[in-house]
Amino acid sequence: MRIDVFTLFPQWFDWFRTQRHVANALGVGHTLACVDYRATTPLSAGQVDDTPFGGGAGMVLRIDVVEAALRARYGEDPVDATARPGRRVVALTPVGRLLDDAYVSELAAEDELVLLCGRYEGFDERILEHFCTDRLSIGRYVLAGGELAAMVVCDAVLRKLPGALGHEDSALEESFSPALEGAPEYPHYTRPAEWRGWTVPDVLLSGHHANIRAWRLAQSRARATGDAGSGRPLP
Ligand SMILES: C[S@@+](CC[C@H](N)C(=O)[O-])C[C@H]1O[C@@H](n2cnc3c(N)ncnc32)[C@H](O)[C@@H]1O
Image (cartoon, rainbow, N blue to C red; front, side):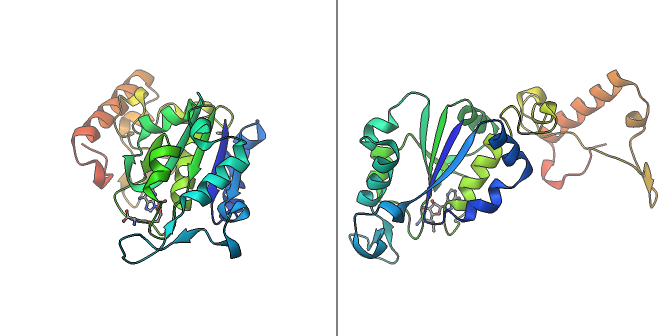
């Protein structure tokens, strides 16, 4: 997969690239590039934003600036570039489609992912209407910019790609995955088997794989309908 992140802060991603599963994914041929809106802005003094029509606080990312950055990267009209099969152009915005496991899998199946990070008050609406296939939100709260949201998307997508994780199975049976019928994952335990009198469920120490599997699925299903937020194992 080829991932391009359009941002005003490309250096933020230097750390992100060094994270193990990201480095693994890049090592097997996937790419993660950052494109700085400022590098190709047609405006003077590196200007990328402007005051909102109609008044109000804050600054809005300009469409001519975003178009210049997309044109420089893809060598064609962004309207055509966005329509290319296998490419998703995703604007990060708090009011977009909420990211979940199914959405991550959908994005992970594409050849190219283009992530547009907003800043300040966000994007001129015409950017979203004409240059993007998706509007994606990582949650119903407002961050200062799209960079952390882009990293969340990249993290979740890259770890679904072959070669990113040490154990391929790790990504198959996880919270919200089809393997767990979309339910939260069951609880995990490791050594010591007892700590301050807090014990581990007997079934996990039994070595009986069918029973362990049944217990895990039951826990997972119970968490789907119960108080998953507490994180406590269910009786
Ligand atoms: C301060 S926010 C703009 C908020 C916007 N004025 C509003 O009220 O919806 C600046 C940028 O951060 C990013 N952002 C903030 N919260 C986000 C979220 N929950 N999910 C995805 N992107 C987010 C978007 O790219 C957005 O354009």
